[in-house]
Amino acid sequence: MKERLFIEDAKRYVQIEEFLMNELGESIPSSVEIEETPVGTRVIIYTLVPGIVIGSGGEKIREITQKLINFGLQNPQIVVEKIKNPDLDPNVIAYKIAKAIEKNINYKKVGNYYLKKVIDAGAIGCEIVISGKIAGEKASSYKFFSGYLEKSGPREHILKAYKTANTKPGVIGIKVYINVSSKQLERISLEEYEKVTEEKISEESAKADKIEEVLQKDLEELVKEGSKIEENKI
Image (cartoon, rainbow, N blue to C red; front, side, top):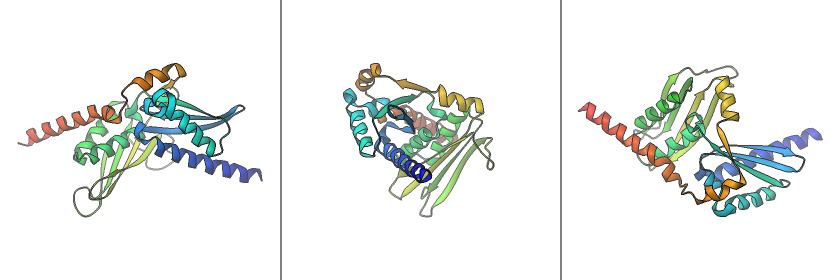
């Protein structure tokens, strides 16, 4: 009986995580953790743009809390934590790649650009796989690889994520694998996130934390990189 209840809770937590990742897509969520406490259920959301999760005056977070109650969570308490080093987070990298491809930026420039950013951030290795109808009518896969990446074994140091880009030829799949050391993994888990407290809600809500602004710098650098490559070819 206890085992069955445990399985049902696990299924519900997976459904809640999928719901939150879809509901908060514009905030670039990285992951969701659910913890049962004596006073209720603690839901931790790791995101690049906390302002979108919180909403104006905390309106969005109250709306999400009500939806979590509908999922059957007892007294859900949402904690929003901001990612400080997005270049070591595969969910963020995959999301940015998807958005760049949707803006018709060449997939090779995009793949090489973000591969370099991950390695420069201190990753031991990184692999980016872009699959779909990218360079023609026939679907194909292109890999961008640098450093050391384990292909078998426990792979507990490998962080991975999958996102999709919607383009005119069809859906493009993006897989990102990042290899970090045990020390980096601990730092990412404990230190790379900044808790958004109640005192910061008004401050975060007041900011113009639109996703276009977050991605604009990367997209401008991508265009510049492409221009330099074209000039070198000539």
